[in-house]
Structures are given as C-alpha cells and as structure tokens.
Length: 266
Image 1 (cartoon, helix red, strand yellow):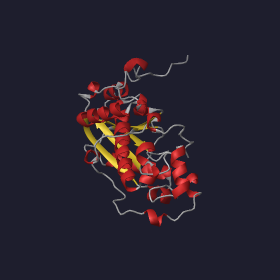
Image 2: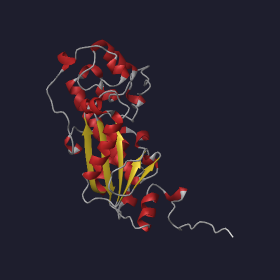
Image 3: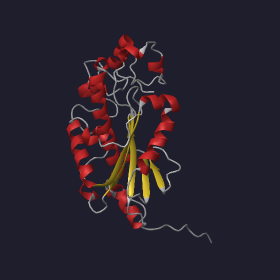
Image 4: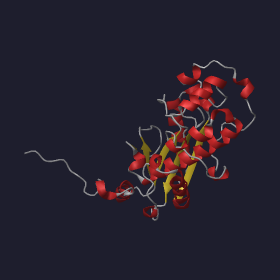
C-alpha cells in the first residue's frame, strides 16, 4: 500500500496571504528574523549597481503599505515606501558597486558578491534569507530564491525600494557631474536620448564599457573626467540629495522626452 508523502500543514503560504505571507509561514517554521535582498541598476549601461538587504521588524511588518513591485510605484509613492521601510526595519545595509568594478569582474559576479556583502552587513544576522530572482550560494544561512520576489515577499519588496531609491539619488548626483548624458532622467538605462548623447560625446567614466552599446563607441573619456568619490559602499542613502526624479527599473515613461523609448537592455 502506497503511503502519501507527509505534508507539514501550515508551512505553505496561501495566494491570498498578502505580502507578509512568506514571513509568517517562516515564523511558524521557527525562522522569525527574515531578510530580503534585491538590487537596482542591473540593466543600466551607466552608473553603479546597488544591492540592498533589509530585515523588517516581525512585530510591525504587517503595518507596511503596499510596496509590492516597486517598479510599478510612482516616484512619490516609492519615496513614501522608503520612509516606511526605514521606520520598520530592524536592520538594513546597502552596497554600491561602481561601473569600473562591473567591467573588471562581470555584472553577475558583482551582483552575487554584492548580495553576500549586503547580507554580511546586517546586524543582527537573519535566520533566513529571501532573494529575488536567482539563488545565491555561500550566504551562511538558509535561503530561498523567489521569482519576482519583490511582488510576493515584504522583506524583498523593502530591499527593492531601498536599492532603487538609493540608486536614483546617486544617478542624480552623477547628473551634476556629467550633465551631457541626462542621468537624472533615464538613470543610466539605454534610452534613445541616452544613446544619442553617448554617440555625440562618447562614454564618461561612469559608463560600463563591458556593455556592447558602450564599448562600441570609441572616445577618449579623459576630457570628461571630474574628480569625485568612487566605489562607495555601506553608506547611509539618507545623506544624499532630497527626493527628485526617480526611475522604474526601466525608466519612468513620464520622465522621458517625446519619442524617447527605452532600448533593449544588455
């Protein structure tokens, strides 16, 4: 006689469980402190890759607003979500990986290393980790990779908001240093206006030369260099400029020029 496999009741979140469903299920399984990790800027051809890890207060995370899929939020809503996350987080850590490092070691390698470094910066350390998209080895704690994690898990959504808002502010700062490219508008993604500026002026030091659409433009960037900080890591994004224009992982259509549609990302 075949015996059906044992199923542990209560360890599977229902579809209607809401954004905190996974964290509540993990708490029933004994994992109370759960962290989420996500990145912003992976598909951009200029600017840094920003990785954030966030661990929400398990007693208060149900009070978080609707921050699922931060790419779909308006700029104002994302800034408000950022303030909520900062208020409800037990711990958070941001890692900024400059374009030079991305060119040197590769985008995916930087992404994985950034996730590990972001997690290592949390204190206290979580008991479980949820990552967006793909699994990450060597985290040192149990982990689960989730497809579109920022749409189904509160801690991943919170990490997504922190990463995106932080990178938006950095790109606005880069716009003041390299105003020829319009970084404040498209945030370094391959829009038509960005590609026109790249063709006209060549790449600046913040462009990722390992990307085909940048590497194919032969220019000497020395004339565009402006002294400034590089390789920032483990900083407080609240020290950056006040909120302004923001992107939605692909640029916000409201910020684009007429006829300026995003090109395919690398």
